[in-house]
Length: 360
Image (tube, rainbow, N blue to C red):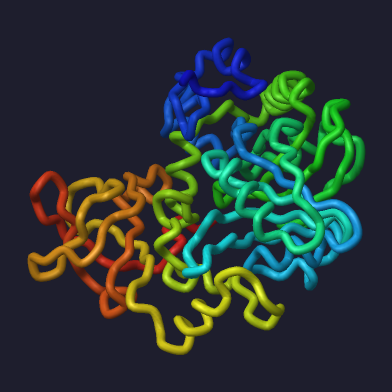
């Protein structure tokens, strides 16, 4: 089956983007080059097409309660105009997905889900929603991420209202370049910036307006390659790599997105037990102490025995080191612990370090 295309497919081709199949979508992996795009986001700004992401909406009386019972974080404690990062969990406490939930008000919640999981998540929510029925709104949104230290100024130039009141993980609605948007101060790069949700028919107009507005500030179009190296330097989890249905938020170091005092949610009982007994494995960040680059699925060894595996790894363009993320037994999870990563049959030294690897 041919991959699906976002509303910006023609724009990527026009700009010379190298397109690949990602999660069933034809997406740009790079334009000028991964390192150049990565550096632009760290020092100036980059614009990403993230229109492949999915959106599920809960609307009407009881929307807040219905959505809140499905996620690990607590929307009841959020204010209107606030977004929360959360997990959708299975009955074993493993991740169905990691999501961002937007609270417009108690009767309107929008949940942004990962591209590869959109249909699965919608089915899972539909099955478990007690109250308001979720609506799959994925086809009604395009999504652009403008990220980097100069992102605020670029978006503000085009916005119909002042955005300085929109703090991190807060959002508003308004026009950007004359296009009606949800303007969200969120991202997946470790830099400041916005994610702009707009109607698909307006995506190209918005994309080129942002590129034009950011020209003098060094803004570049950026692809999935830079998105991956940026998020890896921050130890931001990627679903399907670092988190999946076999690992819980407590094992993944995401205990902070689990609010045990909020009442029941799917997977809660398992997490309570795990919290009481302690986890047997943990997701850690490490750097190599010898030459090599860690990649997903490479074995992690201790005394010649496989004890875990790398879930993400890269040569970090900003940290100038080979860094990785992986699950290890709890005994090896403390900062300074050493083990080896098997790279093409050769054990290479590695050390657990404090994360994020990159600090702004």
